[in-house]
Image 1 (cartoon, rainbow, N blue to C red):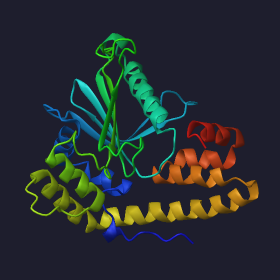
Image 2 (cartoon, helix red, strand yellow):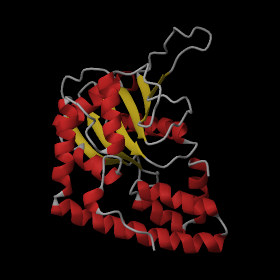
Image 3 (cartoon, rainbow, N blue to C red):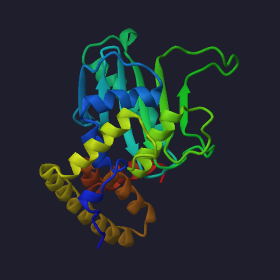
Image 4 (spheres, helix red, strand yellow):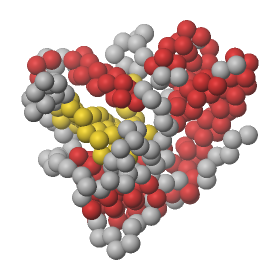
Length: 271
């Protein structure tokens, strides 16, 4: 039986806690500003764990944090499970964000600038960096930007090379990794995040929601282990873990009953 982590011990890298605390605009806005090194004028709306469905038979995309300031769309996700296709997943998210806007009647020429951000507890690219920022550029003329206004950012909270980040950002990433305020820290954002974390840990409604979700997660894991053994597929259990980490129970249910869909998910996540 898989043990359920105690609610009062949850830290910022827990997807449930991360998405709940980021519902607070006074935290989400400065958090994005510090991660991206930009100023955001305001936040028009903030939706936690938004699900985009383009059509009935299409696979939905579930976004942990979805913020729009009127001119730019920001999608931010906590990622604790490593799999090799995360870069393609960022492309997948980008495409669905654009299509969601187009489905709402926006002409493609007026698509908003967008950031797809992954907060990772591992180094996806193996360069010991804290921040990896990607945008489309010309291969022959590297200084020439495509100008499609799509940016993908991968954050590694366990980075070592701090030559490209500020001391304030390093403190923030240290806090995200440990859920403990760094010594001599005077960053008001970190203090606000820590206060919100302690408040969230005493939120009984969230505690009950978390326990229900984690009980379902445990049941799916146990079922997945049994089915994985029957199928002789270690990757099946890896797929279940990825979906469970995202609380994507809709996809998870379909994976357990539809072999063809399951194979597509194997390919999608590079398993």
